[in-house]
Amino acid sequence: MTTTQDLYERVRQSLERVRPYLQIDGGDVELLRVTEYGFVEVKLIGACANCPMSVLTLRAGIERALLRDVPEVRRVESVLQ
Image (cartoon, rainbow, N blue to C red):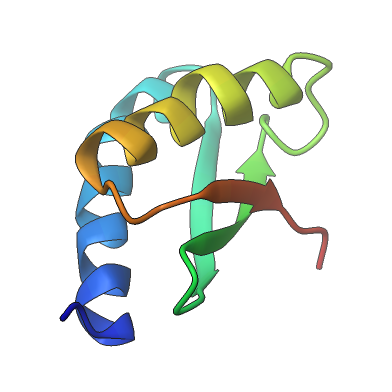
């Protein structure tokens, strides 16, 4: 059985592979929380925070990568903090 801590670490590693693509345009992503049910909360920062394409970045970039790399992930949500 996968622990929440193991799930968090695998999500973190997947985000590290996505991060360079975000940083090219002056953006980044911060991992806030991973629930035991596979829901991931992230915060888009830098240029990504206010970009009109941020929803596309979240769904087609970040979420797609996480779903591919970590099958337990069900949904990724961007949280404003």
